[in-house]
Image (tube, rainbow, N blue to C red; front, side, top):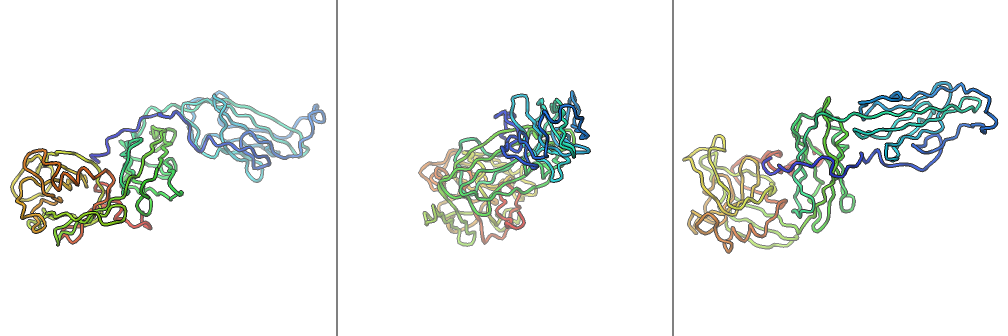
Length: 407
């Protein structure tokens, strides 16, 4: 999307996958790295001269390099049961994992980190309690290609209650489930957030309802060690925290030529507008719920960028422009129509026009100027009673038009 050009800086936090850094201090046959399990092992003095029948195997083999961070690490035993498995990275950070119920194997809980050295230490006991041990050191691969993800939220920014977090990639994503697992949210009241894919290069995230006003949300990207497609990795481990500001929801009624603004659940103002004209057909405004995805100030409106637009060509500078869709729907200042148009007639080429003063910059004291000053990215704008089509959910941040069950 045009408003989503902010690249997520790779390695901002330098952290490993969240799933790989949690460690358990418990014990027992289901223990994680660092735990000691039951197995009836004899004391060292009792088994000094005995040779255990248990054979511990560690994959990858000792000294292995270019190991994939997912699916390669496994500890297993023949003729015995694992009692302890410890896996740490080069900094001593433990890797979480669990021993199977039958004691025959151990697997990590999540992915390892790319470009990291790991040390594995495992012990198992045979039927007589005699212990066998094995160790291995290996190094995971360093990716040569990443999917170059771009997000649409900036750390520390304040946005409206309708904000949808969108993530786009420069390469097709094959393992979509792994990407969804690698993006998590801290939300007020632990509100659930789900991701929805639009094709193979874009995934959007939102809660079921609009965000609570005056709250904070943190998104955790843990994709650096995720193989999103064969040989291509997610490229980023980073956190982005944003604040949800006051609630502002605007409803445009194309039939009454008015926009009603509700602020923090209370009626705030009603603004006379002119929206998409019904003729020609290509001038119709979309129906549906949209979200302000960018505040563009004075924007250049160019008819040549809108496929199929009928009527005379134009290329004009338009003040107080708030982008609603990628295809070119805006709430903006109209600085060319007479005062009598607003609240009475739809003359726009599909946008929502508010009265503004002549000149490229318009006037800050005009209806358009005041609305622009009050608006923020993430505010909700719904258009109803237009003769136009329903807005596509992937046109801008319009995913609110998909119900939660299908999201």
